[in-house]
Length: 638
Image (tube, rainbow, N blue to C red; front, side, top):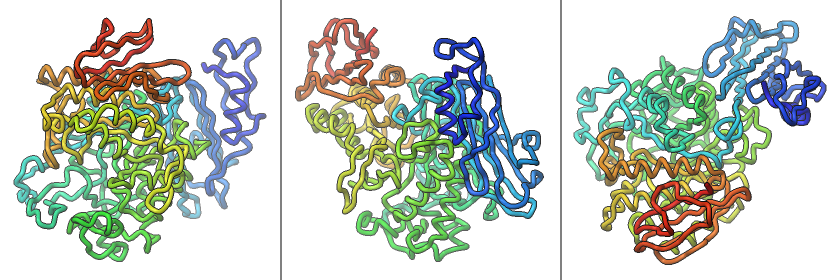
């Protein structure tokens, strides 16, 4: 059963490229404006949106979908050499195929809320292999499912190897072979895997924080040997647990490069990754992966087959900006010369498309974006629009649930450069990190400075501005806010360096979850207060038990603040204004036209401030008009 006003169906039909004549009329005697009417019968489209030699028409309801795919090329399809998948599982395509019209028709109703993505990998009787057709559909009410926009995302960053060891049988022996040269246990593989992440999805760990997006490590095979340091004078050896030394780059369904599987065996199997994604989708959680495209490891078969696609060795060490295009991060990491090799661009773009389609992932965190030629970034974006966002109507915004979100990493003042309609929707916001750290963790800057930065930064990337000799920023921008990640000294350690502790971490958590318009990105361990210095000390295993009183208090604060963001649209899509602003005390209001939420951050002695009548602090810190020292409050209407 779906709520189906006739006007809505006409809009859906228009968006799907189907004529109004294909839309069933509402049932007699049923007023769809006030009640739930019968689900529409499967439609038969006679006008489709073309995708190469295929054409597509879709329709979705609150708990139903219809997907029709027609072959429009020469000859006929060969079903025995073709495959159709739904939610990554092969389905009986022959039962849904009309040979006379060369059309597949799928319809289902009464389906549970989730993402229902189809993948058509088809061949003709003449042996032609068609470009795959990917059809992503989100079904279900609310912002968890079909009502989602990327401004609604709440991201939890997972370092897969350092999160939870769900299957010890896939662990790597760090004492065998060349890995024995890695003498620091902090740089060893430690066993985290897909099974561990799936376990925490199922037990509600992420839902307890309002998290609806997981950023996980790249799932692609990495080197299993020891690695040199980035610094040329550094003699230490490291392992590739972080997944930034890929060797299976270039793998696709039609070009396997000799690999039996491209999936990192220490993380698990391809089926375990599919299970992770499907379990996440069933709970309204998106999954984005790190995507490593700037370079490969020298063991990669793509490098061995096409050394001409890569720059000659040129060290990045101490030359990150002057040599940003073309330098090697280490002596073992060849850097793609995308500008001079369009074949390399196509190979890596096809590899990206294969990952998305094969595992039904929802976005990329694009590693080292500033070190890649713009030709590659634009080619990747164009391919995503054409071959992944097949059910999206406005690719210039991030307001539809099937939009594929790409957030880049471009540090050193390059954050704005790639935020464009033809590149990526966002970047991890280094400016946000620097100011949040200074004002809330190290106390080297005031709350007034934080406020003056934040009110403009909330919307700073929505308009084009000059940057690095070009222009960046556009109306579809959604940046990634963070106060800690895998490349920074741990947030709690930063606070401790100037005499602070968990109370400062909780201030940063609250600020992160109440900053509107952009995406909060919480690094694993910053929910409980993990400590650590520079890499590799900042990448410890996540802990889920034996928490201290302070660690549990920080986790509770993250859970309450995250749930507040998930439950109150103003905190995601609203506008922030000052209510009280002092050097060490800041109260702001976030409003979206439907509700107001008040947030207080106090670095001063206990302050007296009360929200309007009828509001209460969901963090449980503030009552009776008092905001205690080194505490925060989120006041919502009761």
